[in-house]
Image 1 (cartoon, rainbow, N blue to C red):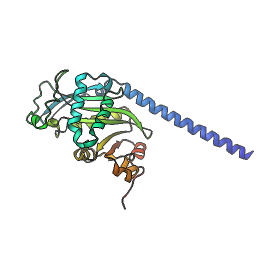
Image 2: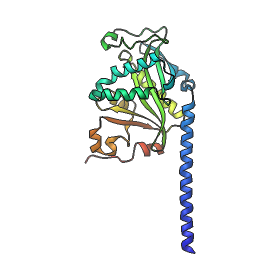
Image 3: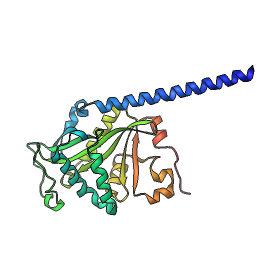
Image 4: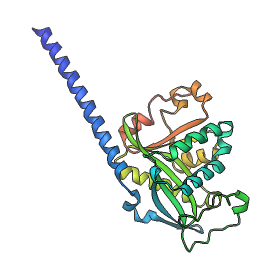
Length: 261
Protein backbone atom coordinates (compact mmCIF):
# COMPACT_ATOMS: atom_id res chain seq x y z
CA UNK A 1 0.00 0.00 0.00
CA UNK A 2 2.81 2.41 0.86
CA UNK A 3 4.47 1.91 -2.54
CA UNK A 4 1.16 2.56 -4.26
CA UNK A 5 0.72 5.81 -2.34
CA UNK A 6 4.17 6.96 -3.41
CA UNK A 7 3.38 6.02 -7.02
CA UNK A 8 0.08 7.90 -6.96
CA UNK A 9 1.80 10.90 -5.42
CA UNK A 10 4.41 10.86 -8.16
CA UNK A 11 1.73 10.81 -10.86
CA UNK A 12 -0.08 13.64 -9.12
CA UNK A 13 3.12 15.70 -9.05
CA UNK A 14 3.70 15.06 -12.75
CA UNK A 15 0.15 16.13 -13.61
CA UNK A 16 0.49 19.29 -11.53
CA UNK A 17 3.82 20.07 -13.15
CA UNK A 18 2.38 19.51 -16.63
CA UNK A 19 -0.62 21.70 -15.80
CA UNK A 20 1.69 24.41 -14.48
CA UNK A 21 3.78 24.33 -17.69
CA UNK A 22 0.69 24.49 -19.92
CA UNK A 23 -0.77 27.38 -17.92
CA UNK A 24 2.49 29.29 -18.13
CA UNK A 25 2.70 28.71 -21.89
CA UNK A 26 -0.91 29.88 -22.29
CA UNK A 27 -0.17 33.02 -20.27
CA UNK A 28 2.89 33.80 -22.43
CA UNK A 29 0.89 33.22 -25.62
CA UNK A 30 -1.76 35.66 -24.35
CA UNK A 31 0.91 38.29 -23.62
CA UNK A 32 2.33 37.94 -27.14
CA UNK A 33 -1.14 38.02 -28.71
CA UNK A 34 -2.18 41.14 -26.79
CA UNK A 35 1.03 42.98 -27.74
CA UNK A 36 0.78 41.93 -31.39
CA UNK A 37 -2.86 43.01 -31.66
CA UNK A 38 -2.17 46.58 -30.56
CA UNK A 39 -2.38 48.78 -33.65
CA UNK A 40 -0.06 51.63 -32.64
CA UNK A 41 2.48 51.20 -29.85
CA UNK A 42 3.48 54.86 -30.07
CA UNK A 43 0.16 56.07 -28.61
CA UNK A 44 1.35 55.20 -25.09
CA UNK A 45 4.48 57.32 -25.42
CA UNK A 46 3.63 60.78 -26.83
CA UNK A 47 7.06 62.28 -25.98
CA UNK A 48 8.65 59.67 -28.26
CA UNK A 49 6.63 60.66 -31.32
CA UNK A 50 9.08 63.47 -32.06
CA UNK A 51 12.84 63.86 -31.85
CA UNK A 52 14.19 67.39 -32.04
CA UNK A 53 17.83 67.41 -30.93
CA UNK A 54 21.35 67.85 -32.27
CA UNK A 55 20.18 69.69 -35.38
CA UNK A 56 17.73 66.90 -36.23
CA UNK A 57 13.94 67.22 -36.34
CA UNK A 58 12.02 64.03 -37.13
CA UNK A 59 8.82 62.27 -36.13
CA UNK A 60 7.82 58.61 -35.73
CA UNK A 61 4.90 56.65 -37.11
CA UNK A 62 3.86 53.02 -36.69
CA UNK A 63 3.47 50.43 -39.43
CA UNK A 64 3.11 46.70 -40.05
CA UNK A 65 4.59 44.22 -42.50
CA UNK A 66 1.30 43.34 -44.16
CA UNK A 67 0.40 46.98 -44.87
CA UNK A 68 3.59 48.28 -46.47
CA UNK A 69 3.16 50.36 -49.61
CA UNK A 70 5.33 49.56 -52.62
CA UNK A 71 7.39 52.72 -52.02
CA UNK A 72 7.93 51.70 -48.37
CA UNK A 73 9.15 48.28 -49.49
CA UNK A 74 11.59 49.88 -51.92
CA UNK A 75 12.84 52.24 -49.23
CA UNK A 76 13.46 49.39 -46.76
CA UNK A 77 15.22 47.26 -49.38
CA UNK A 78 17.44 50.13 -50.54
CA UNK A 79 18.45 51.26 -47.06
CA UNK A 80 19.19 47.68 -46.01
CA UNK A 81 21.42 47.22 -49.04
CA UNK A 82 23.33 50.47 -48.42
CA UNK A 83 23.83 49.78 -44.70
CA UNK A 84 24.22 46.00 -44.57
CA UNK A 85 25.84 44.79 -47.80
CA UNK A 86 29.27 45.65 -46.36
CA UNK A 87 28.90 43.93 -42.95
CA UNK A 88 27.38 40.79 -44.51
CA UNK A 89 29.95 40.57 -47.32
CA UNK A 90 29.56 37.43 -49.46
CA UNK A 91 26.52 36.37 -47.39
CA UNK A 92 24.52 39.42 -48.51
CA UNK A 93 22.75 38.01 -51.65
CA UNK A 94 21.29 35.16 -49.59
CA UNK A 95 20.57 37.36 -46.58
CA UNK A 96 18.87 39.98 -48.74
CA UNK A 97 16.29 37.42 -49.89
CA UNK A 98 15.62 36.43 -46.28
CA UNK A 99 15.17 40.07 -45.26
CA UNK A 100 12.71 40.66 -48.11
CA UNK A 101 10.53 37.84 -46.79
CA UNK A 102 10.86 39.03 -43.19
CA UNK A 103 9.99 42.58 -44.22
CA UNK A 104 6.38 41.79 -45.19
CA UNK A 105 5.54 39.18 -42.54
CA UNK A 106 2.20 39.84 -40.75
CA UNK A 107 3.97 39.82 -37.37
CA UNK A 108 6.47 42.51 -38.45
CA UNK A 109 5.96 45.81 -36.62
CA UNK A 110 7.59 49.07 -37.69
CA UNK A 111 8.53 52.47 -36.42
CA UNK A 112 9.20 54.73 -39.40
CA UNK A 113 11.24 57.89 -38.95
CA UNK A 114 10.31 60.87 -41.14
CA UNK A 115 11.67 64.37 -41.48
CA UNK A 116 9.47 66.93 -39.77
CA UNK A 117 7.86 69.28 -42.36
CA UNK A 118 9.92 72.25 -41.12
CA UNK A 119 13.12 70.23 -40.72
CA UNK A 120 16.40 71.42 -42.15
CA UNK A 121 18.57 68.32 -41.88
CA UNK A 122 22.11 69.05 -42.95
CA UNK A 123 22.29 67.77 -46.52
CA UNK A 124 26.07 68.11 -46.89
CA UNK A 125 26.65 64.43 -46.30
CA UNK A 126 23.90 63.24 -48.65
CA UNK A 127 26.11 62.93 -51.71
CA UNK A 128 28.95 61.42 -49.73
CA UNK A 129 26.72 58.72 -48.29
CA UNK A 130 25.12 57.96 -51.68
CA UNK A 131 21.64 58.06 -50.20
CA UNK A 132 19.88 60.00 -52.98
CA UNK A 133 18.22 56.80 -54.24
CA UNK A 134 16.70 56.22 -50.81
CA UNK A 135 15.30 59.67 -50.10
CA UNK A 136 11.53 59.26 -50.67
CA UNK A 137 8.67 61.74 -50.72
CA UNK A 138 6.02 59.67 -52.52
CA UNK A 139 3.87 58.70 -49.54
CA UNK A 140 4.49 61.48 -47.03
CA UNK A 141 7.42 63.40 -45.58
CA UNK A 142 10.86 61.99 -46.52
CA UNK A 143 11.95 58.89 -44.59
CA UNK A 144 15.32 58.80 -42.83
CA UNK A 145 15.16 55.36 -41.17
CA UNK A 146 13.09 52.63 -39.56
CA UNK A 147 12.91 49.97 -36.85
CA UNK A 148 11.49 46.51 -37.58
CA UNK A 149 10.56 44.61 -34.41
CA UNK A 150 8.44 41.64 -33.38
CA UNK A 151 6.94 40.09 -30.25
CA UNK A 152 8.27 36.53 -29.92
CA UNK A 153 9.19 33.89 -27.33
CA UNK A 154 12.73 32.65 -26.63
CA UNK A 155 13.55 30.19 -23.84
CA UNK A 156 9.99 30.62 -22.48
CA UNK A 157 10.52 34.38 -22.20
CA UNK A 158 8.21 36.78 -24.10
CA UNK A 159 10.36 39.47 -25.65
CA UNK A 160 10.76 42.11 -28.34
CA UNK A 161 13.18 41.05 -31.07
CA UNK A 162 14.62 43.97 -33.03
CA UNK A 163 15.09 42.64 -36.55
CA UNK A 164 16.38 45.94 -37.94
CA UNK A 165 17.38 49.37 -36.74
CA UNK A 166 18.42 51.22 -39.88
CA UNK A 167 19.19 54.94 -40.23
CA UNK A 168 20.50 56.88 -43.18
CA UNK A 169 24.12 57.98 -42.78
CA UNK A 170 23.20 61.66 -42.70
CA UNK A 171 21.16 61.27 -39.49
CA UNK A 172 23.52 58.91 -37.67
CA UNK A 173 25.63 60.05 -34.74
CA UNK A 174 22.99 62.42 -33.37
CA UNK A 175 21.44 60.28 -30.64
CA UNK A 176 18.50 59.05 -32.73
CA UNK A 177 19.49 55.37 -32.57
CA UNK A 178 19.70 55.44 -28.77
CA UNK A 179 16.36 57.28 -28.62
CA UNK A 180 14.69 54.60 -30.77
CA UNK A 181 16.11 51.76 -28.68
CA UNK A 182 14.86 53.46 -25.51
CA UNK A 183 11.44 53.61 -27.14
CA UNK A 184 11.61 49.89 -28.00
CA UNK A 185 12.51 49.09 -24.39
CA UNK A 186 9.54 51.13 -23.16
CA UNK A 187 7.24 49.30 -25.58
CA UNK A 188 8.65 45.97 -24.35
CA UNK A 189 8.13 46.80 -20.67
CA UNK A 190 4.62 48.18 -21.17
CA UNK A 191 3.61 44.99 -22.99
CA UNK A 192 5.00 42.75 -20.23
CA UNK A 193 7.99 41.48 -22.20
CA UNK A 194 10.93 40.05 -20.29
CA UNK A 195 13.66 41.37 -22.58
CA UNK A 196 14.75 43.01 -25.81
CA UNK A 197 16.90 40.93 -28.15
CA UNK A 198 18.68 41.52 -31.47
CA UNK A 199 21.34 40.12 -33.81
CA UNK A 200 24.52 41.97 -34.78
CA UNK A 201 27.11 40.99 -37.38
CA UNK A 202 30.57 40.62 -35.82
CA UNK A 203 32.07 42.69 -38.64
CA UNK A 204 29.72 45.56 -37.76
CA UNK A 205 32.04 46.87 -35.04
CA UNK A 206 30.31 50.24 -34.65
CA UNK A 207 26.93 48.55 -34.09
CA UNK A 208 28.45 46.09 -31.60
CA UNK A 209 30.01 48.96 -29.63
CA UNK A 210 26.76 50.93 -29.77
CA UNK A 211 24.71 48.14 -28.22
CA UNK A 212 27.21 46.76 -25.73
CA UNK A 213 28.89 49.98 -24.56
CA UNK A 214 26.27 52.71 -24.99
CA UNK A 215 23.14 50.69 -24.29
CA UNK A 216 24.57 47.97 -22.01
CA UNK A 217 23.34 44.96 -23.97
CA UNK A 218 25.11 41.67 -23.32
CA UNK A 219 25.89 38.65 -25.47
CA UNK A 220 22.99 36.30 -24.80
CA UNK A 221 23.35 32.79 -23.45
CA UNK A 222 21.61 31.59 -26.65
CA UNK A 223 24.18 33.29 -28.91
CA UNK A 224 26.35 30.70 -30.72
CA UNK A 225 29.54 31.86 -29.01
CA UNK A 226 27.96 31.24 -25.59
CA UNK A 227 26.28 27.95 -26.47
CA UNK A 228 29.50 26.49 -27.89
CA UNK A 229 32.64 28.62 -28.43
CA UNK A 230 33.77 26.39 -31.31
CA UNK A 231 30.49 26.83 -33.15
CA UNK A 232 30.60 30.52 -32.27
CA UNK A 233 33.87 30.91 -34.15
CA UNK A 234 32.18 29.68 -37.33
CA UNK A 235 29.22 32.06 -37.03
CA UNK A 236 29.31 35.62 -38.34
CA UNK A 237 26.95 37.07 -35.72
CA UNK A 238 26.21 37.49 -32.04
CA UNK A 239 22.80 37.61 -30.35
CA UNK A 240 22.57 40.45 -27.84
CA UNK A 241 19.94 41.05 -25.19
CA UNK A 242 18.83 43.20 -22.29
CA UNK A 243 16.63 41.39 -19.76
CA UNK A 244 14.33 43.24 -17.35
CA UNK A 245 13.75 40.75 -14.54
CA UNK A 246 15.61 38.03 -12.67
CA UNK A 247 13.91 35.08 -14.40
CA UNK A 248 14.55 36.49 -17.87
CA UNK A 249 18.17 37.29 -16.97
CA UNK A 250 18.74 33.74 -15.73
CA UNK A 251 17.37 32.28 -18.99
CA UNK A 252 18.79 34.72 -21.53
CA UNK A 253 21.95 36.18 -20.00
CA UNK A 254 23.44 33.97 -17.32
CA UNK A 255 23.20 30.34 -18.43
CA UNK A 256 25.99 28.34 -20.14
CA UNK A 257 28.59 31.03 -19.68
CA UNK A 258 32.05 29.97 -20.85
CA UNK A 259 35.09 31.51 -19.18
CA UNK A 260 38.45 31.41 -20.94
CA UNK A 261 41.08 29.86 -18.73
